[in-house]
Amino acid sequence: MLLTYDLDRAKWVTAPGTASPPAKPHFIRRDTPPISVQFCRGATVVEVGVAPTWRFGIKALGGFSGSYLTSTAAATLSGSGTTAVYAFAPSFNTGAIDTALPTDTKLVEGALEIEITVGAQVTSTVALPCVIDNDYNQGGESPTTSGALAYPATYLSTFTAYTGGGALALDSLAITTADVGRIFSLIGSADPAFPEAVISFWRVYAGTDAAVAGAVVRATNYTGAGVYACVFQRVG
Image (cartoon, rainbow, N blue to C red; front, top):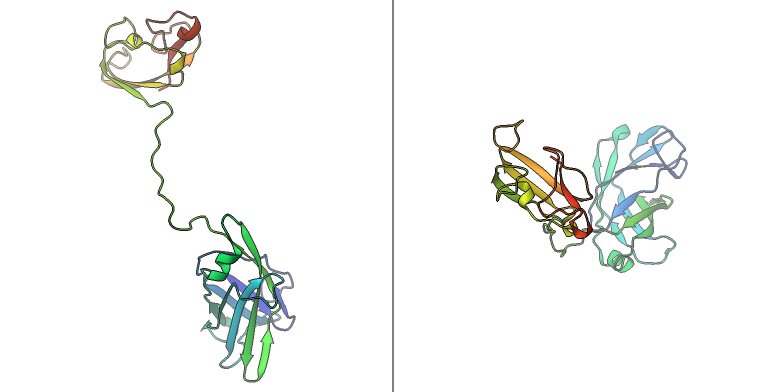
């Protein structure tokens, strides 16, 4: 994250030389994000001075005399002159943030301010409104486990026919409307279009559809009424 502060205008801006304010930055509880800040005067990036000391702090919005939610007195300078960028790394894993974000509280509104001291001169930025969002990965959660399919596939291997009622024929499987949505996976060579072994998938649907070779099969217990008004339809 790169933030820009115009020392001449005394305001946060989107980039050097612009006057538009930046979007409100968001931080995530328990993170330690690098926050880079460049200072400018108009369109020119500048260093803040020789051997500056820092006080970077975020408090709850409006809590001027309250405690910091997070703070740091350390900054690392990279570049120099018109390429100078100061990096801060405050921790968002603090007791104050834990207190401000009790269980299932979505966020806390904050205000970010940086105080710079160079010699006897103290300069503070105006407060930048920001947000600390609660995190969903809080630690201690149980890992997810695989759930059972609502309608697990039932496998019938080496089937020899779709119809005919034999032990290895699809229509030999007795079904009722309680089976609607259930999927059967058939492995064999009953399909004349594919004399080699094939896999096909059949789903149980409620209805009284007429039998269609290779597409719709009525079970041998089909009656077309009540719980027996259902058929197999090929779905793959």
